Image (tube, rainbow, N blue to C red; front, side, top):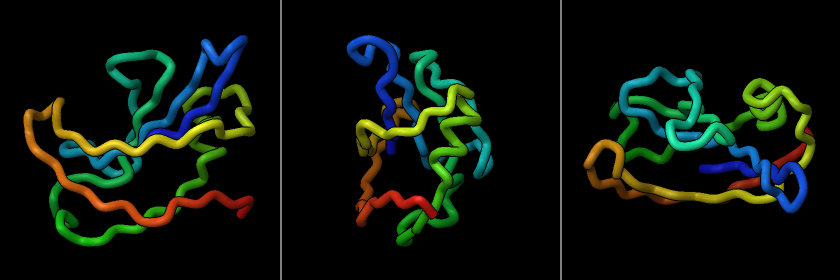
Length: 104
């Protein structure tokens, strides 16, 4: 799931967090997106132990944005959801439930 914050004139300096199910990185680890400096990856899940199970997550997105980009982003402009296995050459199937944000 991408959480996107537009920055700069016309959103040309957009920042994005990408919460992923990582095959080999531990939960909580983060790293730069290999395709753009404007996105940061965070492992929300890891490995295959929970494959085929319904998994729920709760994140402090504001804190994650601050840790990744350090510029006090206080507004989310878009959320994008994607399922793929192109980097690993595998197939993936996923179901998504309600996504919501709160001040809590």
